[in-house]
Image (cartoon, rainbow, N blue to C red; front, side, top):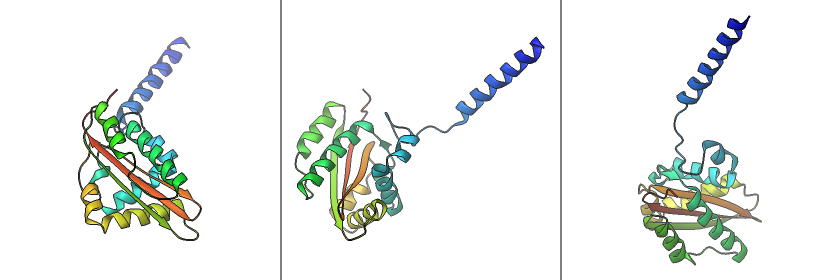
Length: 169
């Protein structure tokens, strides 16, 4: 009986190890897991919309620090009821303090009745693709990024924030 328990325990540990070791590494960067991206629709819907456009900017790391800055500005735009780049120099400086080199930001909004988070994200991504200045930021590879969308009434407010470099704490 004792050897059966030991054998079962060994197989259980081996199974757990194989399961953990076989998982592919997260592509969402420091501070995030694939579960986070799936659980935060404001981010996941926007990231997916950008990926569908072919934007290379979502090939780097979805970074929690960059997202905290992006979400803060997104909240500001919603409360002001308009899109802006107000405070971008401060966001850029903060990312530089974390080790970022170079930065970019794109914002958009789309208003229509019955707008969903997904439709709002897609509309913003399409507007960025059709604008040469915005598209130049989306088609670049950035080491760290965050895309987010927030609904307020019938309007979707969207942001993309980017930097290069190692932002590890």
